[in-house]
Length: 360
Image 1 (cartoon, rainbow, N blue to C red):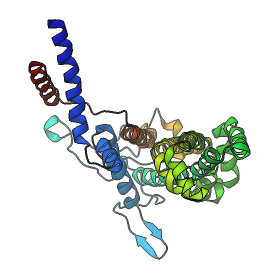
Image 2: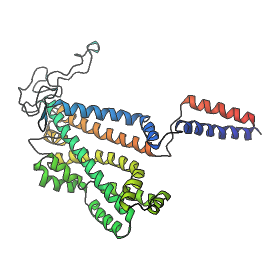
Image 3: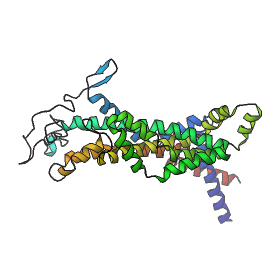
Image 4: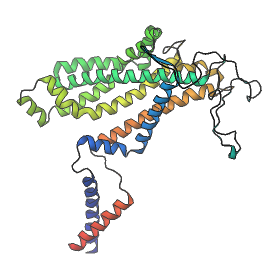
C-alpha cells in the first residue's frame, strides 16, 4: 500500500512539473516560445552580448568610409600609421611592449588603463591595437558574407532537392557530393590564390559559393519530412503553386534547422579564413586579417608573444561565441527541450502531488 502510494506521489509529481512547464507556454506563439527559451540560455545570451560588443567596438574604432560618408573612429592611430617604437617599461632588448594594465593599484599593479599602445607595437612601429581591430573587421566581414551567401544557396538547393525529389534531387545531391569530397581548405586555397588579390569582398564571395553543401543536405532532409504532412496536401488541394508551397508553407517550418546551421557555418567560415590567411591564400597585404597577423608574427612567439596572443584571442572568442549562439538556437527550436525547474518549482510540484495523493 505504501509502495503504491509512493508511486502515485512520484507520478503526480512528474505530472505537476510538466503542468508548470506547460502553463508557462500556454497561449504563446511558436516564435514567443522560441524567444523565451533562447533568452533563458545563459551561455547563448552572454555570447550575443559579447559578439555585439566586439562588432560595435571593432567597426567603430578605426576610420571608415561608406560612399560619401566618413567615420573618424574613436581610436587615435590608424592601422597603417608608422610610429616611434616604444622602449619605456619594456624588458631589456624588447621594444613595442603593451601598455595595457588590468591590475588595480591596491593589488600592487599600475592601475587599470589602456595606455598609448594597449596591444603593443609590431616590428616597424605600427600600433598593434589598430592592426588587430582592422584584422577583426576583415575576418568578421568574411564570416558574415560567407554565412549569408552560403546560407542562401544551401537553403535554395536543399529546398528544391527535397521538395521535387526524383531526377532533380539526384542531380543536385550528386553535385553536392562532388563538392563535399574536395577538402574545404583546398577549395579555399585555389579561390584565395586566384581572387585573394582582388580584395576581401571578392574572396568572401567566392568562398561563399562553396560553403553551402552541409546546409543543403540538412534542409533537404527537413523538406523530405515536411512535404508529406497534411498542411502541404491542403495547400496543393487549394491550388497553391510549387513555389508558394516551398517558400510560404514548408520553409517557415524549417527555419529552425536553417538558422542553427547558418550560425555553425559562420563559425567555420572565420576559422577557414584564418587558416587561408595563415597559409598566405587569404587576405593579402597591405590589408590584414586575424589569420595573416598570426602568420606574420609567428616567429615572435617566444620573444614578443603578445603579437601572437591578441589575434588568437579574438579568433577564439568570436568562434566560441557563434557556437554558443548556435547551441542556444538549437535548444530553443527543439520542442523536446524542457526548462530546468528551479528548487521552488520542484517543491511546488511535490506539494501538489501530495495533495492529489491524499485526495485519492
